[in-house]
Amino acid sequence: MQIRNGRALSPPSLDAQDRSIIEILRTNGRATNLDIAKQLSVTPATISSRLQKLEDARAMRVVAVTDFAALGYNVIIAVGVKVRGRDTQEVGRDLARFPEVLSVNIMNGANDLELLVALHDFSDVQEFLYDHIAGIRGVAGIDAGIAVDIVKFEFNVVPL
Image 1: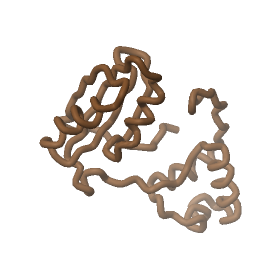
Image 2: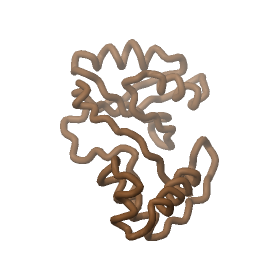
Image 3: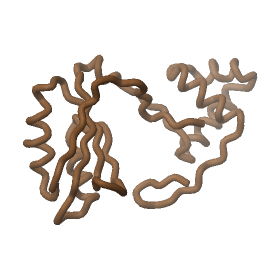
């Protein structure tokens, strides 16, 4: 079961061909319908209709994923946020407006929200935490951890 915007969604059923199409696009996001069709021994029209079905079912979407380090973001921090006196979703939406915030997750645990934040330099950390995040109405506490190494980073990728 997937949860999106507080609503439970039924997972789409994917057959072997759907999984193969997704895997090819994971490997080469620029693969054309013709390229995929040749690899799977089907017609480009079949690939086109399958891709449309997958997108309509929200099982996949084709997006460009940028490399944050290539764009000068050299610091990744995970930030736990405690919220008081304001709706957690509202606070989350306000925090999501910062371009440095890669993800905002509503949590069940020690923190109400968890953020993944990319910054250019260590000198940006204090200003971002105290001036930007702590400046949002409803933020009652911040617990930040700085990533010292990245073992795996696959954004927008779900195991099939």
